[in-house]
Length: 137
Image 1 (spheres, rainbow, N blue to C red):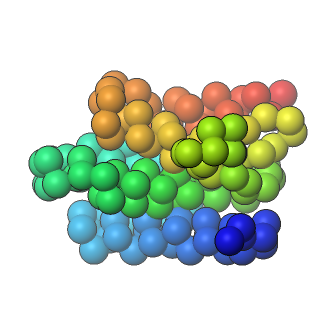
Image 2 (cartoon, helix red, strand yellow):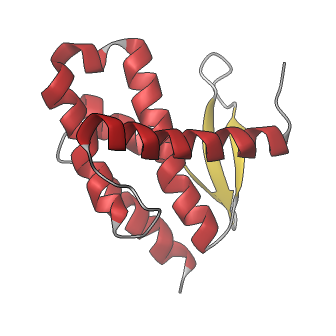
């Protein structure tokens, strides 16, 4: 069953709130919805590995971590510049959520995945800053 656009938006808002709550409970850090808090997300993603080692790389954990922090960053972007959450179904076997804005799509959960799983040097902050720069010219 497909979600409506409003249902998907509600899910992403809830997921962003989950990132705030989980970060407070797990790491005693406050994500306050500000631009500056995105720097914390870069640290927190790696903190999951530090605290839970290989458990953080299990499929369900990766999915949850990447989606809640992707939603959190996307909601900051959406509140600052706008946009709509949507499913990218270009690969029917692996649909994923993106934020559409001004003809571009941003895979905030995807950049979290890259940092968590593939390369700790990848910066969620840099991705966000580039997305912002693309739209605030």
